[in-house]
Length: 254
Length: 77
Image (cartoon, rainbow over all chains, first blue to last red; front, side, top):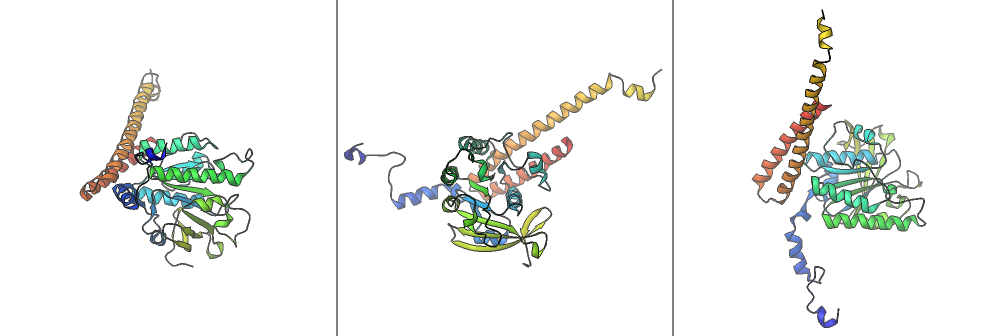
């Protein structure tokens, strides 16, 4: 397009002023939707809850409560009549469903296909179109690309994370991505402990780390909001306890 | 002469009962699907509505539908 023609350009992607954009954003009420975590301290830290368009990375060492925390969020969302769409690559459907003390209404593909982002996007959109599922859980990152064929896992992960963020923004969804940690040990856990790529932390809106605190009891855990871009929260710990099959905030922290 | 147990196991009654049971199950499953689809529609309306009364009413309807679905689920399990 010539410079002169650009003066008249009126496409969807035309450049507009911040004031026009502000009006556009206000018109879209969907962008104000928030879903509470059911954990009061976390909801306060997130200024009311998880907001649509956000991508959350949820990480922690193996067997330290990542899936349990995600299931606790699923239950909290269900109680707000927000039903989740789950991609549980790690667990067989039978095991996954049995993890819920009382099965909430949620949605999941009848069959899973790994390492296919196009397929994943289609299923997320299918679930949203059919069942209006604004909250998505993916367990876990390393099923979204082919580890054995990729030469540079870090770059591959960067592409995956960017795609997920785009899906969340374009469709007003909240996406939770579960990620494993590297073997840095339990003492130095931070967003830098996420396995294989710094892109996870760089491209996500927030990173949560979860680990069990066995010294404080078999059911004790700590959730740490490593950072949250919208609210500016940084390294914010929250004490949790597993009660009746779900992680809830501990009223009297250990 | 057949006794009661023999009659119960005869080939006439049992298949018919099974058929009725299967039809009943299929009907319940259809109802679950119906309510699930309706809930999605109601939740869309609720999200776009600015009227708090409508939102509250939809919340109540969805709660009732979840109760019905759970009742059917228990029957089916």
